[in-house]
Length: 419
Image 1 (cartoon, rainbow, N blue to C red):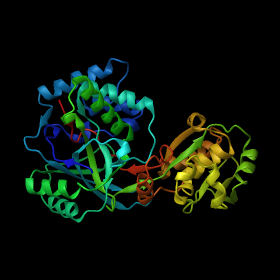
Image 2 (cartoon, helix red, strand yellow; image 1 turned 135 degrees about the vertical axis):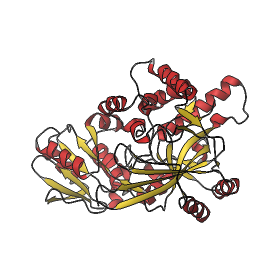
Image 3 (spheres, rainbow, N blue to C red; image 1 turned 30 degrees about the vertical axis):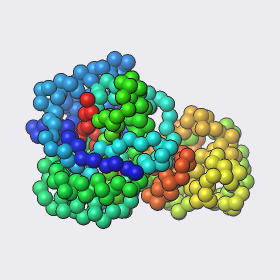
Image 4 (cartoon, helix red, strand yellow; image 1 turned 60 degrees about the vertical axis):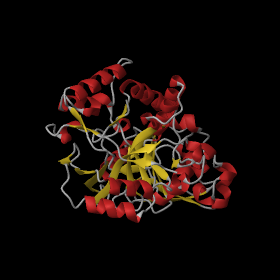
């Protein structure tokens, strides 16, 4: 089962202001944002995450070595877990939330062992990019975000830690408040490790990074001809209890650039399996309902008979009934592929993803009304329980970007150098 361990974390030194140098995960940073981060501070962490050209990986490694040598980064002297809190405002409700977790290194386990459990498929391109970076830097620089089942021992230990003074407290580029504590007490660290020893972990964000870490470790062992455990057999994670009140998952909506058929034909095809009702734009979709926005009208799309759609979903007979009823599965496997003939590759060419915030959703709707996109599919959120249910079934995956957990775990808070 999952091996969760304290480690010697690497940090920016205390003189550097975290809000100027820490950034979100590499895969949500646009090129415009990357350039803006570069201008923000000469030590901005984006220099270790993203770059241009084939030689940027070696340049990132040079920067990493330089920052370790000149004191930009400092290494902890005690193995620790690093407890974190983020205080943020939910963009859809305006509620103030606090999410609590901790950074740890976790033993790498092959996906087929079903110990560390994914819920989304991965693609070769991002894995090759991260593998090149990992080979150059020889450190895990971007933590994987994962959740664990409720555990009273872990909860109680973290609750005691956050009553003490944090060793780092700051606001990030988006105004989110962060606190970080070091937990070095061996008795408490051992208690956390023991409490999670028999548990499974569920990847929330970082599927490509986890598989890349596995590939890297396997190749290193083969090159070195040594199968004993090494530091690179562990990967950096931020772990959060799936019952944490601050663990929030929002949907990601889909803009469609162009359908293979006129919109009128699309509606007729959808009506084979779904009831369609004209609605007033701007009303959030009810649970399990997909909304379909076109230039002229807006619709609720409601599944008529769940038993009819089993033959349309790509999962075949291995998936339980709940999977076939997930709105994101209905959209991708039933509507887009089953009814409209758009396979997974074709879908990637016509879909643009939209974050579920009021501002971005309003702009996406306006883009459709202006004719810049042909349609918008608005999805209800995927729940934490649904992520766990999918993760519990080997080789069962949701479509890409089925979840949008907020806020993202900041890159650069804690690093794990393994060489």
